[in-house]
Length: 150
Image 1 (cartoon, helix red, strand yellow):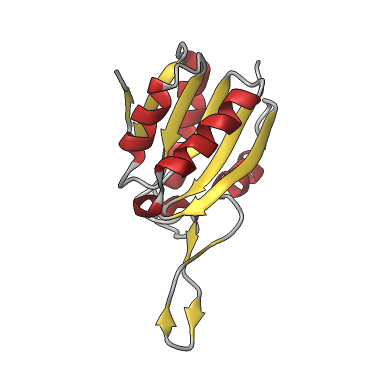
Image 2 (spheres, helix red, strand yellow):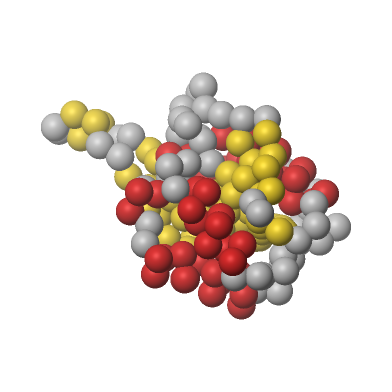
């Protein structure tokens, strides 16, 4: 089985909502995929890295170029990107146009992975299965559905 590269970009899946003296705020910390993989204890080889930690509404073209550069520089052909849902399709379309010749799956969550009712475990689990079964291309994997970006 080929190694899977997980890349964190931010988004709700990675948010934490610590209590501050002025109420609740949010911050990004360790990648949610790392915590999920620790629980799963998978039998495949993987690596988790952070490209950036942003709400997806704040991701710029320059950020997407950095992400594409990381993907191009890496030897792995199976990549899962955790991303905010608001602009996930925009990032996916950008990556598709780069003709990276790798299986790239973007996933995220509507509720942070740290929440007990999060959809993150299902979405990441589906992304892991998807990235191992598909040919090269860019896919979005959320809520029990997989879609290839054309």
